[in-house]
Length: 223
Image (cartoon, rainbow, N blue to C red; front, top):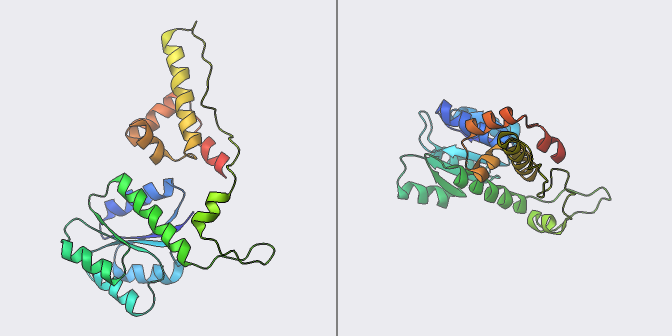
């Protein structure tokens, strides 16, 4: 997974993005202004930056220009704003921003933009040597495509249920198997399971706890 820097002066947005990205398995560094973002950029060497445009000290576009002019723009940057004009978004893109997300940021657009940004960054970065000292020249997307599928260790799609049980017990068995299947399929990502099943995250957590679903199973299988 990736190391992602989130730069936004609003505490609630930083926490929300951090929760979502952590749930996807990423490591998240938070900064509330340009000064903290500069320090994090040097300290953490992020694989991707989510950068708010409107900030109290130095705005995101100015910081982007600074990174671009000093050769520090070595990672994909996705701009965010709830008040930016089209001209501002175009300007940021010309400076070097990969994409622009309008607030409030939707889950689907966020995950898609992050996925595309990380893929772009992986192609630009030189591949590390293998254990035999041979440098891999294929892009990350190509390497992923030729790797074999991991063995299925989670619940299978086909399940058997006892129909001679009371309706409530039979329904609980089905729902537990249903959610365990999706947790295994999504490698334990609560964000993606909530999206797939059409439930709010808080409702989903309560439901899984009620059914006695092991929330760590999918992530252990993926480790």
